[in-house]
Length: 189
Image (cartoon, rainbow, N blue to C red; front, side):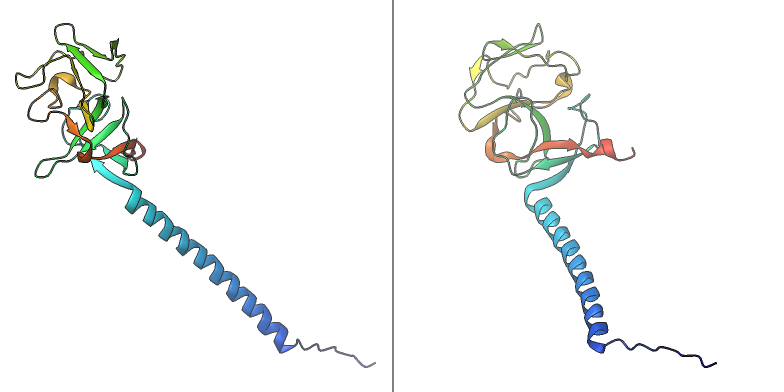
């Protein structure tokens, strides 16, 4: 009895075509991943920054060394936004926007009450009522001028902010970004 063996030869073009398709798929995958990394890097560089909290003026909301992700794409800031302020030659400040351009602001330092546009602010984020005033600060009540913001720390009685002549009203050009998220919450402390 004779055994028969069948031998099949694959066409070289078919083998090369399969290798080419595999190489093309790998190239497409790598190209997509690299493009995505570059896109994310561009977004982070041009639209976001990271800032570190220095001091305790934002306690209890933020504490020393908390790291914040800021968006730099915004130029409109609203009541309650946490912003980073940087004036040339001075240390950056992290504060909360209390009054925006055109708002009428009043602070009753005896009662610790802040009023904007004749409405008492509900401020569950503050450490304690606003009793600290500065002799060189603005006279209340007053209207916030166009292009400026009134900002305070959440730790009102331990915060150098717009109540002080040393800081004063914040020119919008000095706000470098507003907080998107406290990224320290996602890291191990």
